[in-house]
Length: 336
Image (cartoon, rainbow, N blue to C red; front, side, top):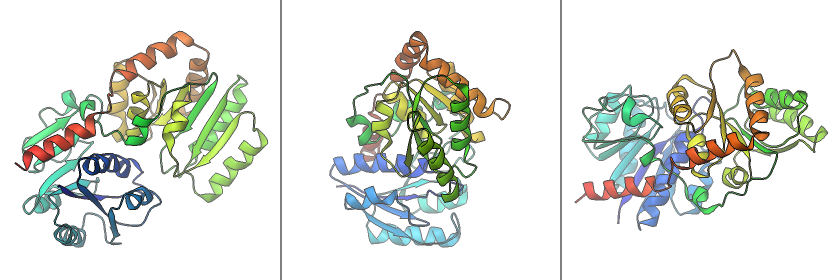
């Protein structure tokens, strides 16, 4: 049996993708008869699934990536007799990671290629990472690069795509502090073309209330959902999805859903552009087009059966859902 301690956070300025992909790997650990545990900075509604599966979940409230954080992580690892530590976060520098790696087998989940730490494994699951970062991770014993290793959660593997005509899904990440969601709703409505959108809102309370008022006034156009939510069933019924970069586009690709990606942070751009180059998504980057460009592309796709079919086929070919099991197999082999 393998015991794995995950050190990952979500929340303002961090987003939910780190915790979501760690949960996908934790599911693979549990499926193999192992135990997964989680240490985070602060409590989150996303911890619910971890606790439901019997994981030990703790929070420490310490500065992320600090010496105190490192000490708390090592203490927790000793308490659960962890065989592996999995670290996922941009605030963990090379010194911090290597301090953990000297005492435990360490898997570091990375997106940026900015840290070359002497870990047992590094995983960069982003589209195009196998080319973009093939010479980056020189000090790790092994680097797992590209969508072959994408950590797809069980919920995504359990649903069957049944796209409904004219149905959009709008989901702009787990931390929409500027309420781009509401802005996009207004532009979609002003366009005048027919659609119905499932809208997943992660804005602060005041922003959510504004989105709720608009959705309530236009029930034929919008169904509003509050995070956290099981996104997979909503994605499975969408004919087109509008999302940020990061984890969600590859989850959508696993179902063959045509995508319009709005790049929300610089670190999302390379993976989004790789998907666009593969013909698997349409991408809006920068502020010049903004939500107007996103709405135009999404509504145009809804009306173009041929374009959707091409995007769906190319997206679905990228993600086979076996990445977490592949990573788990590598971790198990490294222990022998």
